[in-house]
Amino acid sequence: MTKLKGLTMAALAVTLVSIAQPVSGQELNEGTYEIKEINGGQRIKLTGKVDTLRIGLVDGASTLDASGLEAGEVEFYDKIDGRSTVFVKAKGSITFQKKIDGRSKVTARGKEVEFREKIDGGSETIVKVDATGSLTFTELNGGARLYYKKNKGLNISAGKIDNPNSKFEGRDEL
Image 1 (cartoon, rainbow, N blue to C red):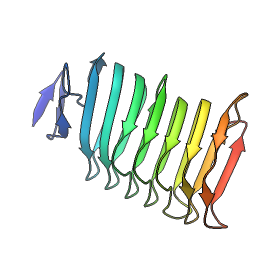
Image 2: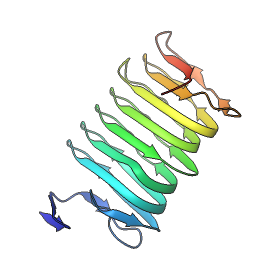
Image 3: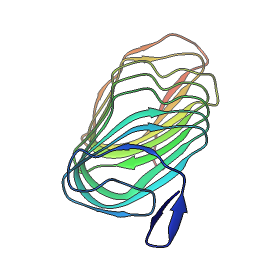
């Protein structure tokens, strides 16, 4: 077990890129941070300020809450799957390199939000986006839902929607 400022937690698959390791409940300060894997029901909450946050696999009903983190950019370089939940915000871009699947739920708030692979996983897969600059997605499938906040000047690049039960919809509030 690792102890930090009164927190006790099992070891996480966290890799230091610079400055200090992000550990749930720790306030981060500047730099680039990377978490390679959040799995097996882990719950991680990140706060503070970072230049870049890189996240690998989020799976196994795990939760990443980075809604209180001030990030310049956020990159998810592996999939989000297995009924996992992600809350993330950035001043700049948020990029999802791999698919979102398996009834997962994602809420992303940033200037530019991009999904480079498909959003899939049935009607319980819900992605909510509050982007002020651009929203891009490649594919929406399997009944998954992508809701975005209607923002003046939002540039949308919509990909293919392969299932009539999938929804891509703008809303006044998320």
